[in-house]
Image (tube, rainbow, N blue to C red; front, side, top):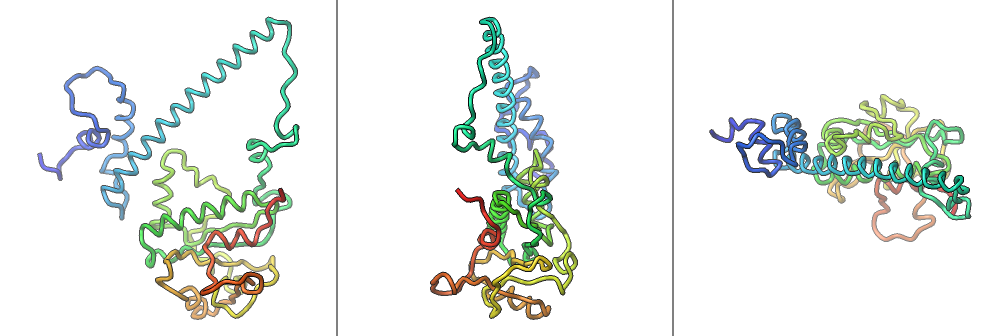
Length: 289
């Protein structure tokens, strides 16, 4: 049988690392094998190589194993807590609950998670910030992964803010969406992030008269945020291979543009260009320690 006619079962065997066996008895890795065969080479996403897809499958299999171990650990923990409760009741009652680190004046990760604000909460900022992801044709696959990391950092910084901005990702689709779908194949976590995903261009979302493109090359200095405007960040990770490209786009479309007052407060040599995540991080307020 040639490689072109290889069946999904053979492909599953190659991915899982098991040798073919005539033994029909269930083995310790049968659950993993059944899961991997669901995502065989027949489901190869468009535009992705077989080698890269195999790596994704291997990564997702590890995630599934980790989720299973996590659930088993949760069950064991509940069993221990139940046993401790029975022992305390047998001794004549439960002791008073222990103080949390927050009550003792410290900080707790769980308490901090509960205090995170959403964009829809009262007290959130009405200022809109959008990352323009319409430059896929100018970005390599490696730089697409870097773009995803910077989008994640934007999201993380906005969650920690005391007044989160209205965070948008426009022109969301193509390879960027496929990469996120593959990365979070099991739980689809990215679909639950507090982000306004829009497949349309930012001009369709906000309107030409309501946008200000943030550009390092602009001569206009942004000293104050206008809640009626949407501030656009170019989602182009290119390591200066396409200098002033976003500026040229803004000029061609006749868009209002401005730059952050970096030179007025920080002495920097060369171009005053920030990474994508540094822009919203500098715009949104953060909690004081």
